[in-house]
Length: 394
Image (cartoon, rainbow, N blue to C red; front, side):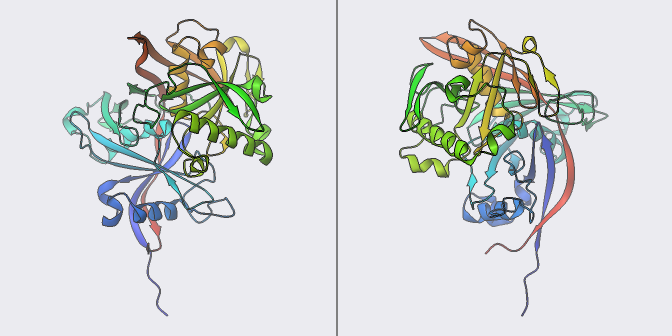
């Protein structure tokens, strides 16, 4: 009996921020995978090693966490005044599902560097030394992102002394600007889909919560940690080892998605794991990070914890950081109130791995809050490049 040989596809394995993923140049994919559909999804699932009932992704490139079960497809941009189009796919670990509903802010930091390495940026725009500004069209949410990629001797500079909590080793700093981050492409419409910065979320058999629903960076539901029985200083093991608690939080997320208008029926939340995110906030307090680092309350403005793909994130998703920055800049949201209230253009928040400073500029125009951009710094580097091999897709 003959067996078909594996196919090999050019690919690059990259870290971006506190995430890792497999990056593809669209033109390198097999022809059926160059367009959306079943074949593309099946290919990416096989690359990552999903679905895996053991939840380990041993037979693929995934790392068995939401932060490492990611794929990116980059191509020359179809949009005027942009360099590349960036499409993100969040691959489920134990199910045959690729979620295309949102962006990954962490991997965004690697897109500009990948584009330069792949020759997708006009060489005339790349300085010998300095900063290359890469104009990215984020396909999932239809937004513009500007990456400021350091260049040394005509090549992407990956090494440096910029330290990012949640990443062990220092690297070169990459500044990212998310322009007009309010995601009005979401079914919920405006930045605050209910038209209010504070809402009541009623979850049957669980409770009633004050919430801030926001579409900025990524659709996010913010709750008060205290209302959930949390301190706001929790680490992954405090939450992720409790299946009953995780199920409760997923139910809250599903009802929040329904109230935001992102889904029409509760059971649709199962097919929309990537969005919305569920996060909880608290006033500053001393705590110890997952690496044993001590964070003092006067070092931060607010505590934030967020769940991704059903588990507490080990640091903070980049897109959720945009949502945090935006919500902090708007008076009387839960994030703003936990940070002390008032007007602000930046916020330093504490997460399970340390701290992060993000900024956003908010203005009230015609009784609607408008945010022109959100800014943060990340780092990225190539971990491996060559080919990824998978059995033929049927």
